[in-house]
Image 1 (spheres, rainbow, N blue to C red):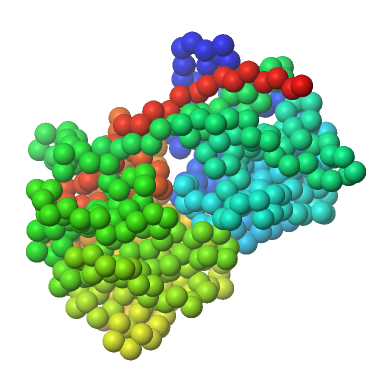
Image 2: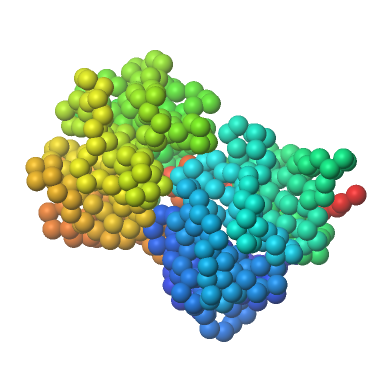
Length: 500
């Protein structure tokens, strides 16, 4: 679209439905895009002409994020925590440095001497980010804004064209960091530019130095159920703004996380006997009923490197949440129950799984003894789900492209589906596994455990998801897919940029 506003037009000659735009060429003629699969989305890098012409593959470069330098002569890109620098067409690539966590939102300084970027604890799109800077020769790697906020939440920065300011988002508002040293050589402090009731993010300084473009968003969702007979989505539970739904074994109760505030509620299916179970600042996700209906287990996302993800348990009638493993230094995510209610299975996040077994991937907590054991062969796997009959355990590969099935009897893992998957859910009878497929425009799919047949249940081409992770999948008691439709607002705003 034009920077002066007006109609939005689609680009033609896109070689794949999985193309994700990550940057614009310095002259504005080409988009830098990734033909992406998996989580985080990664794949080959392409240059896509905006005004017509053929897309071109950028050498052999593959990554999760990328950016051209201001003069277009160099290309930086990331892959699995590593940052590479290549020529502008993707050739002559060399590794610059590596980080433990995901690296994203690359930004070149106007003089081409420095790179800034974010690291993220896991792949939580609503989670915490940390800004870093490094010289293009790989030296002087250091963190920006250490100790400014706890936990840190700085993201998505860009330099102004003249290099005088670095504009970024933090605490849902836009800030600017002056690049010149302050009086007596002290480091300058960030200046708050906006104070909006909306969440503002993704700032882009205009090239003429007079405008600052941002996305303004209000968060709200409507819970919809997919009706297979009509092929339509319709409001469910009166269209409440909720995700991570789980239903008690008897089908009489539902627990869910309210979006966007992140508190857990439970109620009868008709909405009666509704009760709030958790409170801010705890952001609780994925509540799961115990088989006997007396307790709920859930977890909280990591709050920075010093506060890993934690799983909790609380009575279904209310009470104080209790951390199950408060002294464990590793992430504890995706907890769910064994069918007999005696064991909790859980894992780290995808970063843990991608670290070649450096952190436990899938673990089992015996509730009677409080002893933890590892699931055999579960390195590089995460997101476990126990089958209703107790015979199998599902998990995802660290890049979310392979669905794995563990046979508890034979103690063997078997791949049963390939794609770009997320949000695994067993059907009530244990015959199917439902999940989201993020390929192309997205779909709800299921795979039959008996013969590994994969089929599409619902096309999400015209359904805009929202949620803490950008959108998840739950199943109603009859296995109908439940999705949170985005009913909030997202608009691009142009702000006047004046420097005194």
